[in-house]
Length: 283
Image 1 (tube, rainbow, N blue to C red):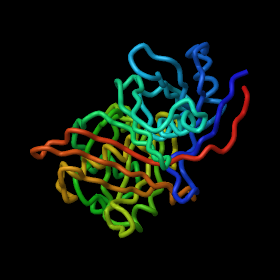
Image 2: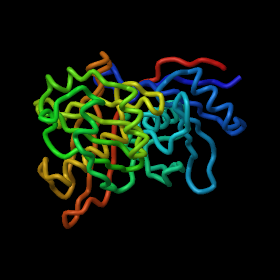
Image 3: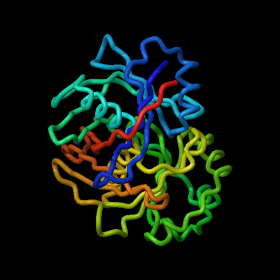
Image 4: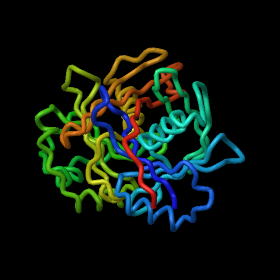
C-alpha cells in the first residue's frame, strides 16, 4: 500500500487553497503506477517525492492524465508535509525536477518559498485567437496577451475588470486547441482592477486535465514577470506581489511572489504560500 496525502496549498486564513496529492516515498513506484494513482486521486497535480543524487529530493508531478515538468502548489504542499513530518526543518533545500534543480526556503512560520526559473517571454497571441476560448470581446483585453514561462509555458490574458473576469464561461475545446498550437498548459486570466491584492486570477488548463483550479504557483510567478516586463507595476530591487485565485470556485487562495531585479532585468523569481494537511488515503 502507498499512502497519499491531501494537502491544500496557498491557503488563506486556513481556508481554501488548491489541493494536491503528495506521496512522500515513491522510490519503488513505476511511472505507470504514479500516473494511475494521480488519475485515481483526481487532483490537478499529485507530487511523488524520492531521493536525488543532485539535490535533497526529486519530485515528479502528474496531472490526472499526464506528467508535467513543474507544479507550484504541489511543491508548496510537498515541503509543508515534509516539514510537518519533521523530515526537514527551517532552512534552504533543493529539489530536482524536470524543469531543473530549484531552491526551496522553509520559514519558521510555515511559509514555503519556491524558486522558479528566470522568465522567458515568448509569443504575443492575437486576441482573436483567445476570444472564442473565453467568450469575450476583443475590447475586454486590457494589454498584450502573451506566452510567458518560469518553468511551464502559459498564455497570460489580461482582463479589463473584475466583473468581466468573474463572468468568463470558458470554452474548453477551444482552449485545448489553442494550448496545443502554442505548446502551453492553458490560459491564465487576470485583472489588476482589485484593491485587496496585485491581481485576481483564474486558471484554465483542460489540456492537462485541469478545468479550473484554486491556486497556480508557477503561473503566479510568471504573471509577476509579465507585470514587470510590461511596466504594469512599480519595480524595485526586490519586488513583491500578491494574487488571489479560486474565488470563482469557492476555494479562495492567496499566492505571494518575490522578484529580484537588477538593471531592469529579472534575476530571481520565487512564489510563496502556506499549506494545510487535510487527510490521507492508502492505495
